[in-house]
Image (cartoon, rainbow, N blue to C red; front, top):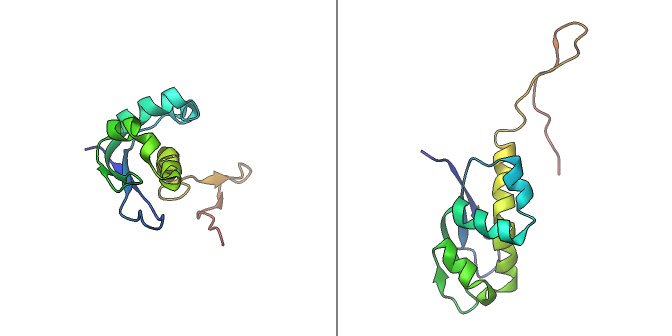
Length: 120
């Protein structure tokens, strides 16, 4: 079973829009997101479900529809679409926090046993 990450829109008026992205990314694929042609190929291959509305309120539910109708999206939602793949990959990369054990090497005992927490 493929794991997925759902990226949910928080844009006013488009809160029901989402993009569900398949897990299993390589660094090469992540780096390719900067290239528009590669982005389209990854969008079509990695998006497993979605609901994205055009500016006129038409619901798009297939990845190819978003590619074909991209110019009909509200600019805020277009940005959401553009960044949804990288947002999903970023979440996947940090899912569960950092999973590692750091050792000083001198004593062989761990110098840090818990994951650091960030503050806002």
